[in-house]
Image 1: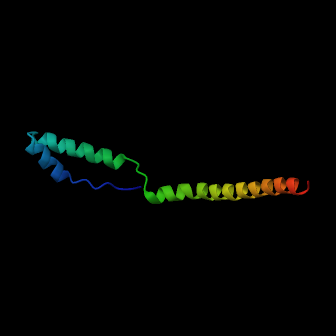
Image 2 (image 1 turned 180 degrees about the horizontal axis):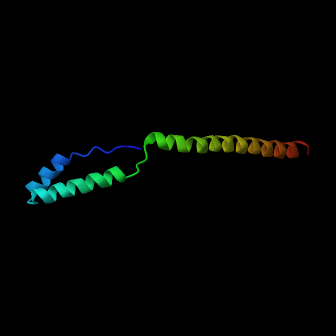
Image 3 (image 1 turned 30 degrees about the horizontal axis):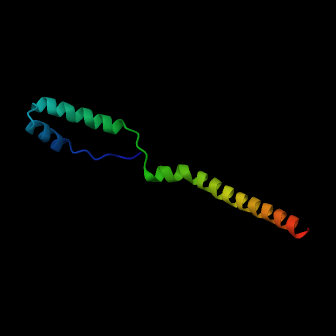
Length: 83
């Protein structure tokens, strides 16, 4: 699981500069930090692991369709050459 860097002190100072009281700003910062810690984020590595089987299947389908097209072309060529 990925972690999100969150600067609580900067967040609190920004809220205080906007006129929010210090206890409220600290409560907001704690709530935001808790919610970001609870988030289940997907990383690039997670996606690569999940998508690897799909990539293999797509490659197999490409080869299968290529062989099928080659077979159809061979049959059509045989039909016209035999005449």
